[in-house]
Length: 257
Image (cartoon, rainbow, N blue to C red; front, side, top):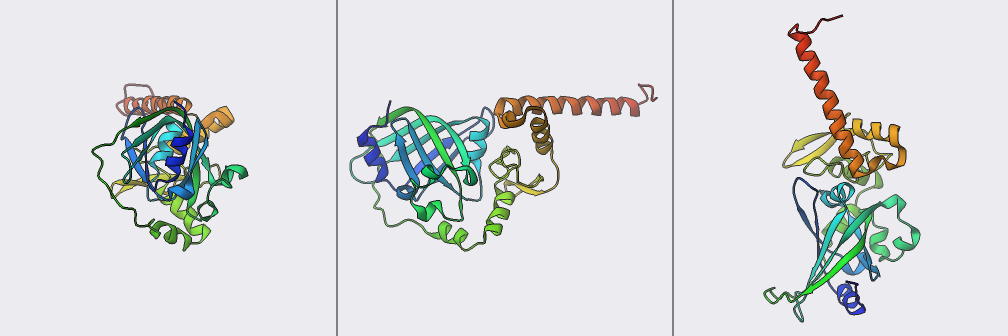
């Protein structure tokens, strides 16, 4: 169940991998990842890491904050057929808190890129290898540069605003990498549904209320998923009781003093 030297050598030659994450409820997400040879690293037989580049969504980070489980899959599209899956749990290191030695392990073209938003570090619990006999053959041409060029053409402030707008919530409304629940210097926002996604707008939401309450009561452990779940139920129950009391008052079933 370790990543062998043969595995590590083969992984380093690939051009794409896939990342699957989920929480106990909601959508299961699968994301393709490119720029592999500059942005994926085997750190030890039980640990890998990859650079997370900015995109229009942030499902992976949102799921990892809430749940932590992850599966990474590499597939051979040329040469001998092979599929390698890495199962494990992962943590999200936002750009500003990535240790220097880890950051320097990646190609600096990507580690210094304006669109780089985090490093995903995976503690690998299981390594599996299967045949992939039915996988079609493809010839690699080149990496697409559009994402790289798009964000490199922005200012740092523009990229930051993009993060807040599009990377604050998952499609299931979970707080993600740009949300104040995970980034203390992020602005307060509320969510707005449009075109199949939750966008962040200036305001104050229930997610913000829970996060601020958790920080006030529990400090550094406030972002842990079980605590966030408990607070969500607590706040929901409290608001439900308040609404019920208001309804009863309105119907004059309780004395108003």
